[in-house]
Length: 606
Image 1 (cartoon, rainbow, N blue to C red):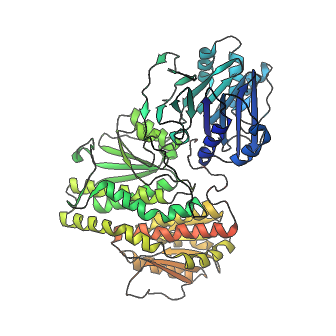
Image 2 (image 1 turned 45 degrees about the vertical axis):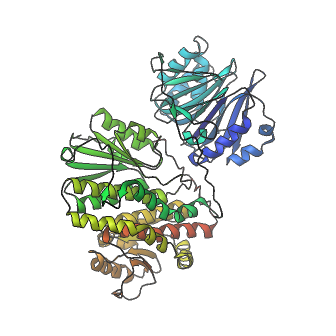
C-alpha cells in the first residue's frame, strides 16, 4: 500500500516527482522520499510523515537531476521513520517498492553472508542488495530477471542505477504499475491518477513483466526476459481536478456529493422513459447463470452483504458472499454457471485481485464493480460495471459505498427482469422509486446539528454497538466500521436478534447503542431487541424513517428520522447518519479525518 513515481526527462524532475507524490498520498502517508541521479551519484532524500515534510526539506528544494524515483509509504516491515522510508539505496542502485517480499529474511541472511550491510528494518532493502550482487556478473536485463525470480511475494518496483544514468527499470508482480509517455520524457507510476497531470498515454504492466524506461522510448520484457510489445492506451485528455473547495475535509465533501453519486449511476444505467435498465454487452444469457458469488474487502464486503439481501429478495438466484482474503485460500468448488462479482473502489485491492485471478484460472464468469475503470480488477474481469462516483480521496469510503450498492441493486433488478423473477409492474415501480432517490438522499443529509451533539456521547464511551436486522444489518456493520476507522472508538455491528446470544453481556450503564429500525418487515422484532439493551442501561440512538406512527418504545435516548421510501432503498438513507456520526466524532477529537492512522486508500498488499 505504497505509491511509486519515476520520471526520465531532459529537464529537472524533482518538482514533478513531489507533485505526483501528493497525488499518490492516498496510498500511504507515514513517510516519503525520492532519489535522483546527478553528477554520477545517487542523491537520496527521505522524511518521516507526509509529503509536505519532504517538500520542505532544503535538500529537495535544491535537488538536481533529470531522472528520479519517488515514494510514499504505508509501513509493512519496519517502523514508519526516515530510515525505513523509501527509496533504499546502495552505492550503485536505488529502489522504491510497493508490496511485500515474503522470503526477505532468507535473502537477507544470504546477502549478509556475501558481505552486504543493511541499514533498515524493511523487506525492500534486500531487493537493493540482490540487484547490486547480481550486477557483478550480469547485465541490466539479466540482473533484473535473476532478481525477480528470487523474490517471493508481491511487488511493484522503480529502480535507478548510478552507472546507467539514462534509464529507469519498472517491474510488477501482484501490485499495480503503469508506464506513461510524454514528449522527450517517460514515466512510471502506481496508477494513472498520478501520471495524468503529465500524460494521457498509458501502458499497464501485467504480472511478471518488467520494462526499461528511457527518455525517448520504453522496452518491455516478459518474465523470461523476452522483449514484448504492449498496447498504449489513451485516457481522457482532460485531467480530472478535485479539491476540497469550501469543505474542511474531503470526507465531508464526499458525503455531501452522494446525491450526485446516485444521480450519475441512475443516469448511466437506467432508461426512465422506457422503464428499463441499460447494461450493454452483458456477455452471458440469464439462463447461463444460476448463482452469484459476491467478493470484496472492508466497506466493499459490506456492499456485497447488502447486495445478498437484494438478490435473494428480488431474484431466485443462489447467492454467496465472501471476504476476498478468505475466498482465495479456501478449497473453492468453482461452477461454470456461477457469476463471480468482485467489488472494489480502487480496483487494485490485492486480496480481491488475487481472488479474481484464481477465478480466471478456473475459467469461470467474472464481473467487476469498481470506481476506477483503468484498474487491474477492471482490466482483468470479463465484464465491468463502473460506479461513476468520481474521485474519492477520503480513506474511509462514503460515496463509493453508496455507488457500489446502487450498481449492485440495479444488477439485481436487471437479472430479476431477464429471468422473469419479478413482475413488470413491480419492476416499473422500483424504477420510479429509484428516480426519487437522489432527492431523498439530499434531504436526509440535512441532519448535521443533531448528529454533532450526539457524537459527544460516543467519544466519551469506551465502546459502542450498531444493531440492525435484514436490510439494516449490513448498514450496521458499515456504521461501526466508519466509527472505528475515523474515531478509533471500539464499535461492533451485530444482527439485532443475535444480542441475546452473547453480546448482550457487553451492555452496561450509559453505553451508546445505535439501533437501525426502519418501518420494514423487521421493525417490530428490532424494537423488541432494542428494549433488551435499554433494560440493561444502554443509551439508544434509534434511526428510523419518517412515519405517522409513533415508535412503540419508551426510554429512547435520541431518535433520528430519515426520509421514507420503499424497503429496498432505505439502506441508502440509513447510511448517511452513520457516516456523519463518524465524521463529527473524529472532528471533535481533532483527528486526521481524510487520512486515519494505520490505513491507506488503495490496499495493494495482503
